[in-house]
Length: 386
Ligand code: COA
Image 1 (cartoon, rainbow, N blue to C red):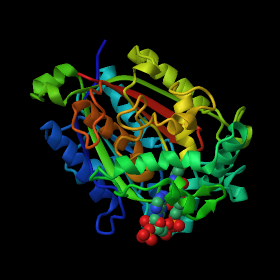
Image 2: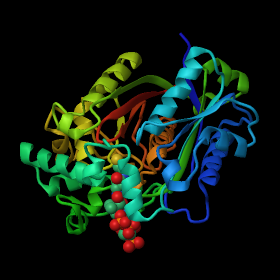
Image 3: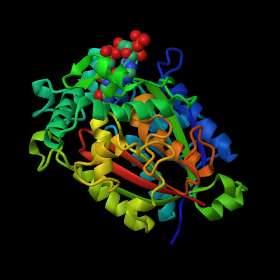
Image 4: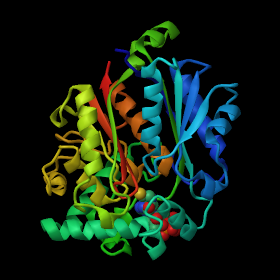
């Protein structure tokens, strides 16, 4: 069977990029990934993006990015799966390589969010919720996640302080990441004293609105050899899975189970021939602190109801058993929504090459999990050091 390896990775810093447009960000990340791989051509391009239409009045991103990068008449499309667009775009790129239809594929995740008014940004993001059952009633993503957070705390007896530990861990790692939006460590008190956005969810329980782009180059080991890419750069895409769940929370069988993550992880683990216990680090989708807890449970790193316990026991730090958010996660690196899954991939690549600013010792297998909606569309990818 054909295999897929990532041979190049690049990204822009995450933040408020007043002087760079969406295309500038995307092309900067893409050229940096191509430069990392030492190549100047790709056969096709997949652009992960969630809401460029409402935010910057630009669609047709595949053509925009490939054209602006001077890549000629290659096939190029946008992949949209809400906040999981980046993870899904990586999977489409890998599928193209595994199918044999494409040899060298570029994946670019990009989002430009800070040009919009905050109230507009909140509404555009909520387009990925259920328009008739949620958005119509004024339920934003912050509000929906606040409901889940309250129910999680009530069901399992956790406090706001317990969940704050996820933000503290993310900021501790983000502080060392030159590409992170927030580069300062915080304390539990920082989270607890931050203003409520939707009770019990506070400013520091949430990922920020921001801009950024990340990119990876995918090919086969045979082609990587032919292109002369040194083996130290290769990272294998060992497994992938994707699944959906009900789009509205009201229809969900169990509010506290990320079923789509569970199903996607089972598929990814099976394809990679690994189990949760084999994973050296988890880049989970901590758009809100409670999502980090639920993700750890769905991925099999913690039992149901015990995701926050892992944080309380100090098990999510870089040198602990279940390192998460090794470069700051969505909370501190930032969450340029459609780009996030590609940022996670770049971070996994850096960890597995031993080049991460907060290096997980002897990392061999890493996992990225990218959530769209309030758990309605989830991708899980497993990467292995070559
Ligand atoms: N964590 C920590 N600090 C944050 C932050 C965050 N998530 N978001 C903003 N800040 C800081 C800003 O840097 C700024 O600091 P400064 O005053 O020192 O410059 C301050 O808080 C105010 O920033 P502002 O941009 O005015 O915040 P806001 O009130 O407009 O937005 C949120 C804050 C939480 C409402 C917004 O970030 C948000 O909606 N986040 C969730 C995004 C989302 O839903 N993503 C999709 C998930 S599925």
